[in-house]
Amino acid sequence: MTIAAVVLKLEGGTYLKWAQSYWNNGDDAWQNPITKGFIVYGRSDETMDPKGARYNCSDIYFALEGFPGVKDSVVVSQYNKDMDERVILFVKMFPGHELTDKVKEKINETIEHHLTYEHIPDIIMEAPDIPVCNLREYLLITGGTNAVSSGESRIWVWEGLRS
Image (cartoon, rainbow, N blue to C red; front, top):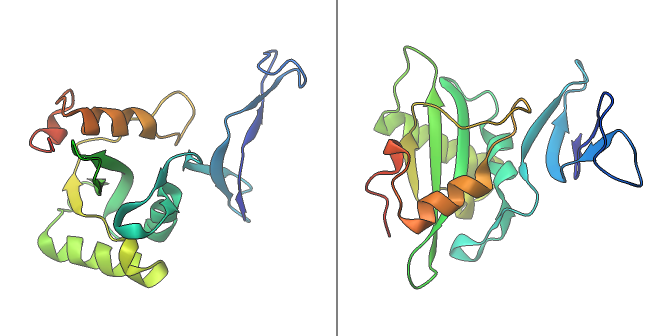
């Protein structure tokens, strides 16, 4: 079951005046039917529109869930000075696995199988790690998009992606 917004109960905390002790981050999430745990996929407002196909980054995460050798991933948009958009998929591999051209091809095939050709990222790169914040599995997608699009190479893996 995919839900459009995650509302978390806070222990002794306050976030919303109208809902004491609850916090709503507005992210897409998937609830595991067996464990009842949640995987938060990403900002529901992080809509991508490359190649004329409008979709959410969580679509990619769902398609790659359980992909052999891939431990984690984050997908971001990058815009050039003319505001042309391309999609970059960063993947963190499990130890002992490499992101080879064959693995990239299989990733693209998996995305196309579960979604469409238009969902295939323009670039797939290996990342040494995927940034997360204090909430488990919450990806810092908006910050990643801004850093990649600005051309600033704050994180070494983005070096050379300037538009």
